[in-house]
Length: 105
Image (cartoon, rainbow, N blue to C red; front, side):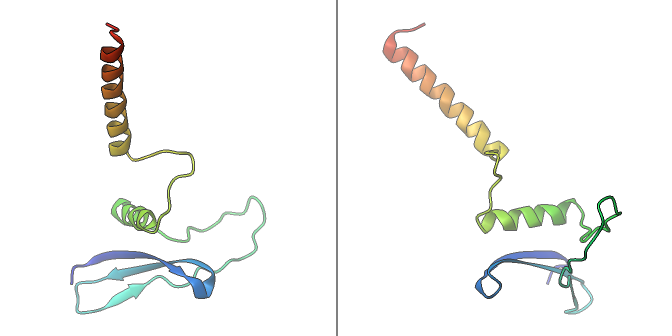
C-alpha cells in the first residue's frame, strides 16, 4: 500500500449529512493514523482559533477532488480551468458559424 493521506467523503444518512474521513497511511506495515472527530467549542469573538486540520497542497487537492466526486461544486459558478477554456472555444466556434451564415465579415 502506498503511503500518503487518504481523504474520503461519504453521504452518511445515519448522521444526516456528509462525513469526511481523513487517514494518514504510513509505509511501516499497515499502520494507519486517522483524524478523530472535530469537537465544537464555544469561543469568544476575537479569540485565536486553533487550526483544526493541517494539510499540505496535495492533501488539500485530494479533499477538493473527493468533494467534487461527492457532487459538491463552487456556488459562485466558477468552473474548472479546462471547462472554462472549452466553453470559450465553443463560443468562438459558434461566432464563426453565425457570422458565416449571416454573411458578416
